[in-house]
Image 1: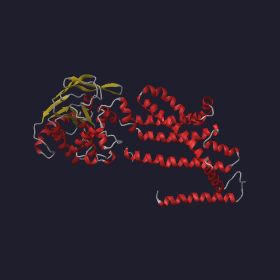
Image 2 (image 1 turned 45 degrees about the vertical axis):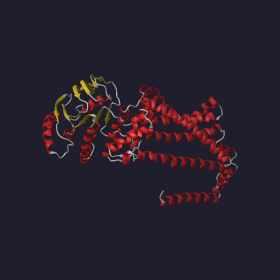
Image 3 (image 1 turned 30 degrees about the horizontal axis):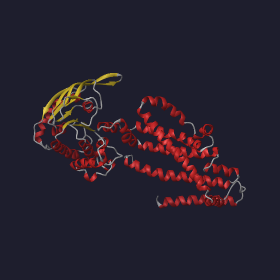
Image 4 (image 1 turned 120 degrees about the horizontal axis):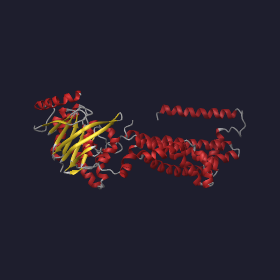
Length: 251
Length: 252
């Protein structure tokens, strides 16, 4: 299962010696199997919220629950995909993807079996023995996604994973991401500053306000999949979301 | 190596030998001060034929390898602790910086007092000279690791112990590698220096013997051997590893 609840999450950072409120009570319910996208102005704390959910940072107030259990630390039930992928350059693609399984003590043969399933899903099979310096940015993100999926987490946390990609590669991965979500039925929380991306991916899009962030508004996106970037029917959603977002960016 | 570079090198060294031979033939200095290249080669050939040269090289290299291994193991542990535990860095870290400034040779009197004229004494000098170079480079390497590597590993379930072997050491490896290289350089100088002062087997000892016998060609022959081993280690061993590491880590 992957029912995620955020209850009144608060977070302060220190800026010039003074506490700076970044998250101002984030209340959020994500149902099992939902694909939630968070958009917000840069620096609003949306990534911080994701990191708190992953357990990489502690909140100053409130709590996160996964299937009604409060979370206190990182755990393989919530796997994060980082903006730059954070792949390990000293390991080849296969070993990168198997990292979490190896840490968990799963024997080589079993690891191989699992990793090859996901390498196949991400169309990486022929790159299994490549090193990261031999891969394009798009390929690296595929590896990062495969590495996360291999852990079979309940929740996938994605922190602007496509921000550094060229538009063509991004479009391709945006379609693939929808297929992966449909196939694996994972709960996904996806942070981005790109509204078009959020509308293509999300079942729901949340707009964060400028710091200290609260959830300003949420939009349900009921539309058939796979959605493509050329689909004009998605434009009205984008417009409505942008109308909410724009004043926040200007603050 | 490109053939033109190789030709330049060969030409350069040939010229040195010709000038050297010319100076010797000019009889400016007596032979017991300035040997001819032929004398030096004869001396090397003699050392090879009676095995004393190989025994000397073997003894020095063995001391180097043992000492350097201790330095590498100790330096890795110390460097990682300094990078991960701030209190260790603030206390032991400052001491390491101080100790690093002591030349290996300055440890010799202490080594003789503690261990006598033994192999252990020389190995101690080698290890203590090299350990801080490895420590400081490991520390710097671990401090410079991209934090998302560590976060990604923790996120996938790595415990602190697993983090050290599976992330910290490999991620910091380009730095650790330069620590090994610096450590080797200090250790190699240390072993020769210590052998000179201990005068107990090894290449440094052979240098001393050459001086005592007034055998200047032996002194120069051994110096050439020391240089040759240095070139082999740095040019072949370290360069190969370094090239591979730099490419894979995407630093080149």
